[in-house]
Image (cartoon, rainbow, N blue to C red; front, side, top):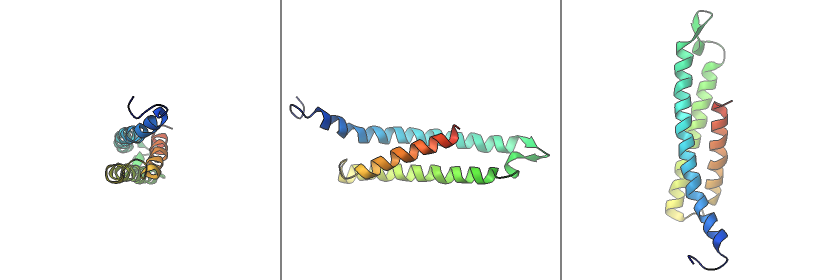
Length: 111
C-alpha cells in the first residue's frame, strides 16, 4: 500500500498534473513544427504571381497562430512553475487551463 486502502483515486489524480504538463509540452512542440511548415509553404507557393503569404488573410492566420502558440507555451510554463513551487492541488486551475489551450492550439493546425 502506498497511501493506504481506498486512496487509489487520490494517487491517480495526483499523477494527472505532471502528465498533462508533458502532453502540453509535446503539443506546443508539434504546434511549433506545424507553424514552421505553414510559413515555409506560404512563402514557397505562388498564386496569381505572388507568394501565398502576400495574398488575402494568410499573414493574419500565421500571426494569430503564433499568438495562440505563445499563449499555450506561457500557460504551460506557468502551470509547471506553480506545480514546482506550490504543489499540484493549488496549481489545479492552471493545469486545467493548459489542457484546454493546448487542445485548441493543435486543432487550429490540423483542420
